[in-house]
Image (cartoon, rainbow, N blue to C red; front, top):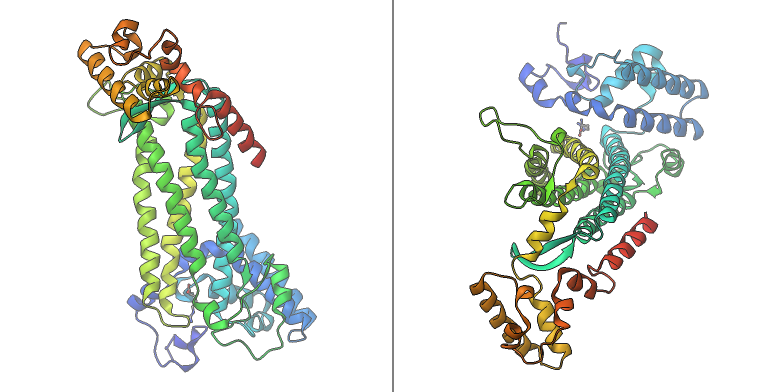
Length: 461
Ligand code: ARG
């Protein structure tokens, strides 16, 4: 009988094999092979538990655990042939185990389904990934803190509406980025805490007839506990969605940083230089040095947002419990992992290398009447109501603009035209350094406050 359907692990009730096209549609081993370590860890814990409760003999457990160790070593070494006909990572490994150890391999799947198996593999994978991403975020964070410290006194314009607003320090700006990435880290850790429950034991959807010990499996796999409901467990992919959302928000942050770096590296701003190794040239314009790294990170953000959307749409129509649709969760998830990892790595390398062109930053901050608010605040200190001060300074700015100079370059007599309250001490208030130093409280831009923020952030790490 030439029918190969009964060679499938599930082939018993089938009269014919899937067509080649159906096999190509069904297979996931081309992408889920990357779960092999988690799959083997899960299987070993499951086998030990079956031994503990007396479903498997000690010899079978031993053969399974050792057999799986051998398979993992071979996969690690690149000596494993994945077979599309065996569909997925789970059946490839199980079939190989049986080929190596015989009947004990066939007993491994007792009390388990691929539905709770893949849910377990994927939770372990996302958990491992979160730990890697947190380490990468820590590297980015360290780079930002060092850069912020180096530039704690450097003046640059702060912007609102992309117009020069008030002077800030470059260090303060870097610490703003730092807050974003710190929130990102805590968001990943929140997701980690929520996902860290064991799915195994849910079996296909309703649980299993064997006297399993889920708590024992959970402990072996480092889970904090076990999931509550078998139907929910085999269908739940919230943890993958949460990861993809956290990844999206990290990339949105990196994309915003990228946008700023791209602007700042252009001659019109000239705030920073990116070392040549983070840039490329043009094939036609010999003078060009393009900020490709931030551009590519900004660009790659799009696909990570797309992956989140793909997962949301994948889930939205699914009734309980497991549906094969869920196999499609992996390509977008893995793509987000790879893209995020690459972008965090490159930012961790690039941030310490950013060269700040302090003179240009300072010159830009001196433009655009960035200390106009300081003049208004000065008049308020002299007794003028803020609204009146705002108006007087508005007229002062219009006058200076006509004259083609900054308000700090106007003579005392010129300033006094708009308010008789102005005295010689005004100049200290409306210099860039005066403006910075005056914003001297928790969370503000005064250099000593920036240093305090950096120290707090270092202590929190
Ligand atoms: N490869 C499958 C997935 O990723 C494993 C679970 C298959 N379950 C099933 N009942 N066909 O979702």
